[in-house]
Amino acid sequence: MSVRLLLAVLVMVGLALPVAGTLLSHHYRASATQAFDERLEATLNVIMAGVTYDRVEQQLVHDRALGDPRFDNVYSGWYWQITDGEENTLASRSLWDQRLPVIDSDTLSARSIPGPRGQSLRVVERDIHLAPLEAPLHISVAARDDVLTRDIGEFQRLLWGGLVGLGVLLLGVLALQVRWGLAPLRRMHANLHEVEQGRAEQLDTRLPDELATLAASMNAVLARDQRLIERGRHTAGNLAHALKTPLSVMRLQLRQLPEANRAAWEVELERVDSAVRHHLARASAAGEGIRFAPIDLHATLAPLLNGLARLAQRRGIALRQTWTGEINVHMDGQDIQELVGNLMDNALRWAHSDVQLQVESEGQQLTLTVSDDGPGMSEAECQQAVQRGKRLDEQRSGSGLGLAIVTDLVALYSGHMHLSRASTGGLNVAVALPVVARNRRV
Image (tube, rainbow, N blue to C red; front, side, top):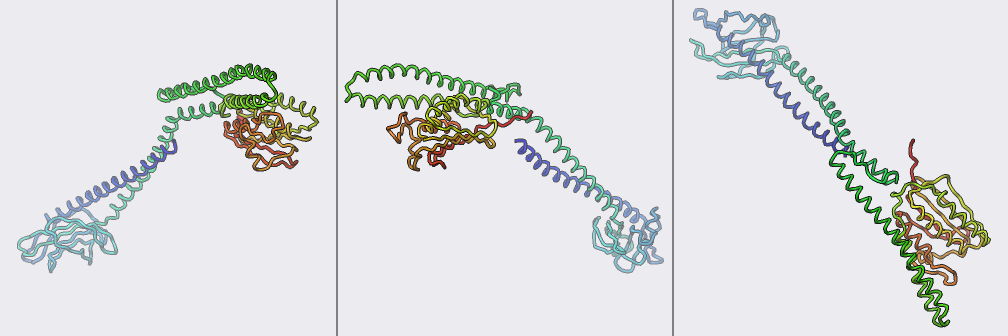
């Protein structure tokens, strides 16, 4: 957001300052040129007042001093000229043997012309009628415009330099203002990250009024979601206890039924028990790992793995573990225990003599790999294995829910699971979960 605001300010400053600079430059050029022309016009009026025609000599005469020695210095850049376009012509000594170009103009006019020795001149001129001459006289006053051009150039350099400095200053001030104004949003973003990482339960409401209201509303949503999750988990536990006793009683009563009727009832009770356990496992899963404070994965799984190691020893199966250092994850402890427990239980049930557990982490990705040396599965069987209640071997004990429950938990934590044949010939189950906690900087 701050980048967009700064870009908007940059565009505004980049458009406004050049437009303002162009207008100021044009206005100054027009004003300076007008002032220069007015100065030449004043000199023109003095020359007009001093010109006469000598009837005896039959020539033009100008006997009034202008008080400016530059009109007497040859090619000084300041010139005046009076001519009727024919024989009668007067000119300042500074023109020497050169003459200014003439145009017919009854009114006062100003223009730029080339002068002697390649000089650039600004000329003010007009026609007047002087008795007893029949032809009008054309009076011109010219001066080098390099001083005018230099003044305009100096002003433009100062103007654009000042505008650039002003633009940099404005951008700096506005950048500080944007950073200061968006500081509460950055604090709120950091606070949200803390909540996502499980290091805080609610957002800090010590913010400006608008953001404080938003933070309070988000806290209310977070609190409601937490209550719903807890209520669902408690309801699942209560339902498990409520169903446990009736199912146990029904199994006891099955023993009193004739052998012919008992098998059908056992199948149906097994289906009920499987469905109940599956949905309870799904309901009790806490959800996405980013809502939990990081837990030590090894410490959380240690009791489970110790119990499984004793079970494997009794069955004559070697249980090997490989860990890549200490790993902290954003998961509910019960969820990770149920996930690993189901994978390991399935491997121990089918293995002949060897089960391997490999735990790795890279970035935020946790990879759990469980493999065995059992009969393994074909590609089609790997697809069927994750279907709820699907049994590949009805002679083995268990409900067939293990991998299906794992699939549900993996989906809840936005991960993925892949089944393939292990190098030892059995089943290889690889689970990847984006739940590894980042190390906090001290």
